[in-house]
Amino acid sequence: MEKMHCAVVDIANERLDVAAAIEFVSDPGFGGIAMFVGRVRDMNHGRRVAGVSYDLFDVLAVNIFNDIASDTLREFDGKLKIFVTHAKGRLGIGDLAVVVAVGSPHRDEAFRACRMVIEKVKHQAPIWKQEHYEDGNSEWSEGCSLCEVHDHAQHAGEHASGH
Image (tube, rainbow, N blue to C red; front, side):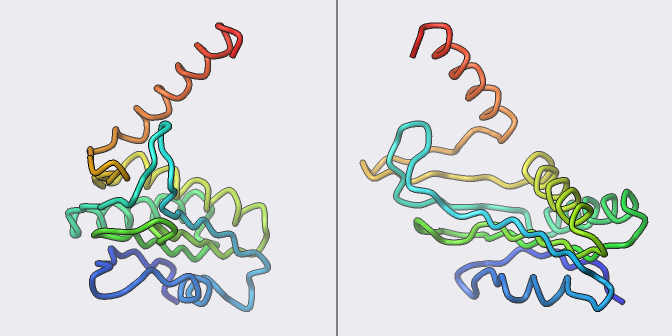
């Protein structure tokens, strides 16, 4: 039984497939499926976003996805099936950027493993994101961990100033 499916999807040729993710992680012995679907949103840091471009070094990204999935399988004694796909190319608002699904015997394992996988993908995978704004400008976004530090510092400042 195949336990992992990890891929980069060039959206010029195909789209991410939520149904394929569910089908892959389904098993007669599994009572739980948890899924994370990441979509392109229309605002980031107060700026109106028109779309994003994702660039990945496919082979390296898939190897890291496989490492993340393998580590997660070990963490849960192999009693999971894991599906990870990430889009590559130019995406519009609402387009799917990432799909992570986990099937397991019980819901708690499915939720915990799915969260573990998406967090590691966001922090470890070599994925570069360029945001395109409605005003015509674009910029490469900060890494995930830098964004969280920035958001935390910004919110702490807002609370300190009474906003």
